Length: 170
Image (cartoon, rainbow, N blue to C red; front, top):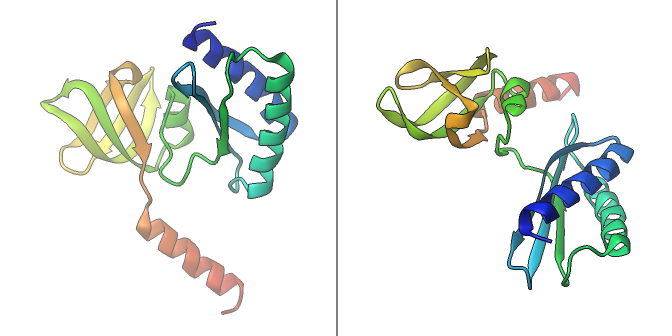
């Protein structure tokens, strides 16, 4: 089975297991060599995933992968959160994180620029509308994206922390 077929099968199995746990499958992938593969699964939920969520998915996914036995060698299984500065893997991720700070690198220059930092403004007609800190509003298709990640909004985190302190009466 080739690497792409393995990744598709892993995604299919992981999606079913993650759904059973009422979590979101962010991404599943197989990396490394055929002799020493690593299966990575990133999961999420509204208020973030816990260690227990990762352990439960890992346990169930490992048992299912071992039962089906379609990976020809021993493998390392990693189940984790995508992290605070998670990668944006699809156009739907841009829709989901509209309003969030992000950094985007494009495959080709757009208005003479390939690296953008700013805020995802919206997605319109399959185009990402991005407010770049240096050049203002730019538009590009998801196909033009080489890599994109959320960035931590320090000011927003500070406001959230202050709000929590106020609500807790501290």
